[in-house]
Length: 290
Image 1 (tube, rainbow, N blue to C red):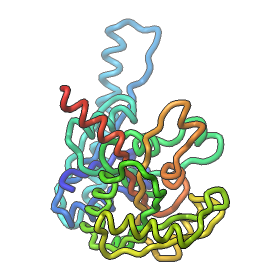
Image 2: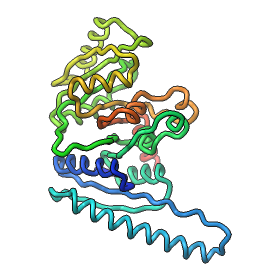
Image 3: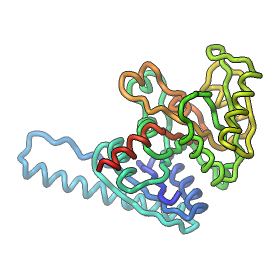
């Protein structure tokens, strides 16, 4: 985790993400890159010269304000002297973050989020959810921060998919090894997806053996739905982080199929680490073609 990106809008949640990024970078010896994205104002009914001049003044003002806020954040929270870089760009939040991830070869993204719910979630989602879906590198969504909290228990929900899981599991193993944490593999047994517990345990044990997992527990947890079951199980085992894969579904298909990982990001109070192998593969292909 040499290059850790934290998009910052100076909200409480983005500062929480920065503080957790500092903890991780202090442990890894890496660098935290802070990114503030400002939107240029939409200007109408003016001459071209006036537009250019006014936009330049506005961007300069936004940049000066952001630089002062960055300085205060770093001075207040970077007590261990972690290397921190600050970047300010103009453009769309989602596209700017993804471009920065690719151009700077980021290893990990930490994003603060309040989460969204109801009709707003169904219609637009959050910026964090969009990055979770499209990022070629792992993302940790952060809602809270507790000083001195160590990540010692990682909850790893398993869907028992028969497809290619190697990339995701290797990333989770690296995450577990970095934190020297215990891994809690869980299948949430819901009324809609109910399977006999003995059958599930055998499959989970085969999964763990196949990928040579260490320091893990096997768990079958009965609950009304997957998202709530993951949350309740994490609470019961005093989990510190939830690790999940996401399919990166976008467009109209996403509205109808959704994603358990993105639901967890939106609604669960714990930090959620996600990885989209599909987005990573797409990025690798584009990099080869460039």
